[in-house]
Image 1 (cartoon, rainbow, N blue to C red):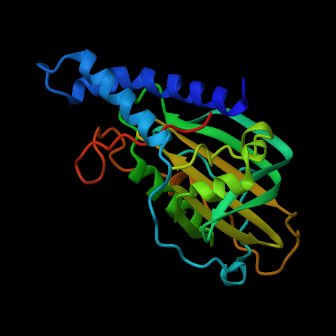
Image 2 (image 1 turned 90 degrees about the horizontal axis):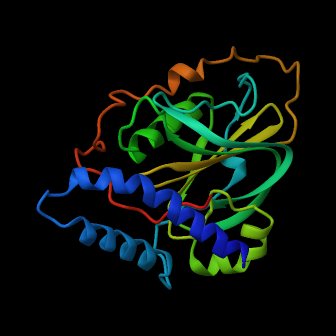
Image 3 (image 1 turned 120 degrees about the horizontal axis):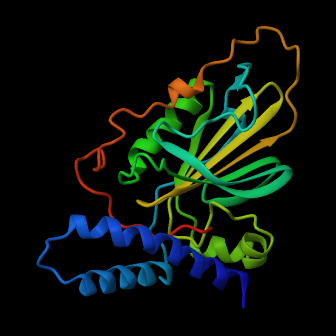
Length: 257
């Protein structure tokens, strides 16, 4: 049994269980539950087995245009989960590798590694809001000089170029998943090191990878005071069940575990 097949089955099971509780509340009571479950399953399978993925406008990536900063980021992995959310199944490595998407290309980045699922806190069982989580990380990362370098979907051709062995067998595609999912990629250049952050989300949960490439140079002049990122990450109205437009998010392709 291939690693890709195992990831696929695990992904479907983990994502389908919470949907059985969430979706009935969003559907008319007269609609049979069996019909809803069948529709959900068909949607997931069709999205996952599509031959091509949506075309997204891309911006050329140039590391030289990413500004340098001297802000003290604090302890690795630097960025806490937004208020109302938590990290789950955390994997920390002193040296790891992950593929990050920029300019439509999957690029391997190696360094100190943090990988985790991003879920709602158990005490706050509201719908996972993609837009609110993204805005929270936007604020946190840009507040310390980072920039979003890509909001894109890896193409089928690019996934095949990298290959299943790299993505699944060697576990270097935690946020890349099975394609068809939009990735949010950020880069921060700080005191001689690079910090890469990548998010992959659907309306049930998310996945995040943070890699610190290189070591920070200590004792640099004009170092700024560390910012309180826990406050920057605050999400307003985090108990709201709907997305920012007042509409429940559309079901996305499931994430890789």
